[in-house]
Image (tube, helix red, strand yellow):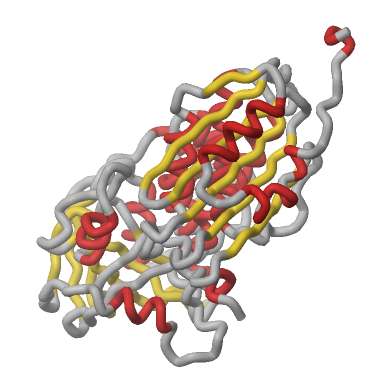
Length: 389
């Protein structure tokens, strides 16, 4: 089992992932007693181990974690900030979402809030030191078993969120689409889904699943809207790079299709020898879960958001090139936000595919011979329109 596929989940059978263990050794955890109080960002964690009996609770910042992470920070700053985020956990059965006990109800109130919520927690024992990395989730630091939890400020709950949480007749997909259209962000949607607050049959959902599910559901909804829009008339090349993640996005004047080429350069995280993967879809619904995991849906969402605002559809080729500068997993938010930043750049315009392709190849460090054969959009001829003649 290769590291690029496993990404620290222990599928190699070793008791400790050697890569994840090396990252944890970099951590200098904060000292925490049996009681904490502060403002949860808001952030909550729901694990998947032991499902359907999972561990869940709010994530609170220690004194070491005063800065929220964002693009523009370097890797060390992000890891330092996340190292001070303390996970509080208690066992919750996923079916308890509809009739929550006191702890789960408090977690649900935090999930509904659009602003930080004052929270006080007591642990059975002082939290254990550690730094948890994951390909989907943001890193977190120490964790401890919850004894008691109290919300000390009123959550700021948007009216639309309150309405959709009370609406048990709408499916999770419909509820998420309505909330997103009302301006509720993807991270907020993920929290609501994770704490079992949306849909007809409500269950608590592990955080890593809810993140990808939110990207997938909103992306699917945007795709349906984009399919009714006119095609772009030229070739557009967008570019962006942060945290060792380099994106090139080529829009082609043809009916909607989406293709992601993911290139992990040699000696990058999880890929000592390098790795190149590819997945894609056309106008038809995508049936199988992507072989490129959550990054596929995060990148697709970013491009579809841009196309909907622009009022156009296109053939979409995304090339994500990951360098050795991305030396620790920071979560799928990096893919989504760097792709959004790329789509916010000023694109270069071309009248035909050959010069657009040449410029795309020039901007990447990986030789074209290693990956271009996988990019079907660069070899398929564009269908000509009647008004081209």
